[in-house]
Image (cartoon, rainbow, N blue to C red):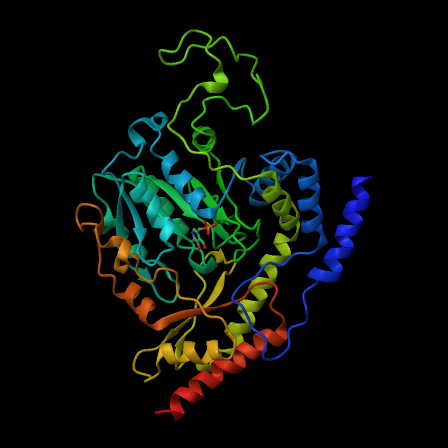
Amino acid sequence: MEKQQILDMVTQYCKERHTSREWKPGDRINYAGRVYDEEELCNLVDASLDFWLTAGKYTEEFESGLGKYLDIPYCSVVNSGSSANLLAIASLTSPLLKEKRILPGDEVITVAAAFPTTVAPIVQCGAVPVFVDIDIPYYNIDISLLEGALSPRTKAVFLAHSLGNVFDLKTVKEFCVQHGLFLVEDNCDALGAEYEVNGVYQKAGTIGDIGTSSFYPAHHMTMGEGGAVYTRNPLLHRIIRSLRDWGRDCVCSGGQDNRCGHRFDGQYGTLPQGYDHKYVYSHLGYNLKATDLQAAIGAAQLKKLPGFVERRRENWCYLREQLRDLEEYFILPEITSHSVPSWFGFMLMVREGTGISRDEIIAYLEKHEIQTRALFAGNIIRHPCFETMEEGKDYRICSSLEKTDKVMNRGFWVGVYPGMTKEMLDEMILRIHESISGSHTSR
Ligand SMILES: Cc1ncc(COP(=O)(O)O)c(C=O)c1O
């Protein structure tokens, strides 16, 4: 039997079973969802039939394709965005970075209005997260607080581009350069966003030392589970690959032997001369690799990514325009200057003094099948996972977190994913308007 016969059947199956049903009023409007066609399914089946399973031809295709899209030389696929963040921070603890490396007790500046696994790796790697407040209506770090967060132990700044809106990269990068700090961009919610540096637009995630992506289904593109870490720095790339792949010193990919021709003639540590380089470990590492099945889906998604990003921007702009008349009730989101966001969601903050309840609005929208989301952890410090953490020792708070708490108490967001049609957006707009008039009449 020819593989193509199977793939033709898969194409047929996908068209019959997977082609999404038209949305009709009353159907659920999720905040995000997978957008795919027969190409993803065929790639997945193709990878399954090859049965290579671990990183292979699709992983290579995806890593080089993502690198081209981002215009960055080094890209490593991993099994989730959380793994990407762990790898990014763990790589900064490498002894190969000498005095710049993060040691236990060193500090990393971040925000408390965060996704949990942006903060978790800082703690997991023995460092101390230092929290500052965010800015409304950008939902990113308030850069005026950076200097106040600095201490002799600060080694890095690690921030996400919240909901696809790029943080003030120019100021944060200059701060990092001035103080000799690493900058890690959690780009999980902003793939495709751009930022202007000296008249040139660069992709978000490529301006700091390391960028990370998530390919969980809610994100700009998906592999089911998956992520990536990217950098321009060859040393960081070497460390990232080593830590991702068990801590190995050797750069051969799985199943490959003796690429450098020196497999049996090196001297490493106090190992015997010529010890097999494939089993020499320069780090105490992890195994965070993804499978070729995940990369196969990613390779097909990557071709659609520019279109996805455009649709997200269009949907966000449409919501922004159509909700403009509610500005008296909601703080509407704004774009950071010098940036072209790649929106993950549309954030709404109920204004104080309007007598309107955020919780009632959410309840109304959810009752009408419109899915809403909180800005991730709201304030991560308020979660049970921080109960055993000691302020001043395990973490530091460097400013009032008043705006973080405001967003936690008064904010929510709705989706802009590319699967949303104009009818779905119009339904959301209608229900958001109704939720406001409902809140009024009930008072
Ligand atoms: C900003 C941010 N960072 C990291 C992650 C973690 O990604 P994953 O779910 O792939 O582990 C997410 C997930 O949604 C996220 O939004």
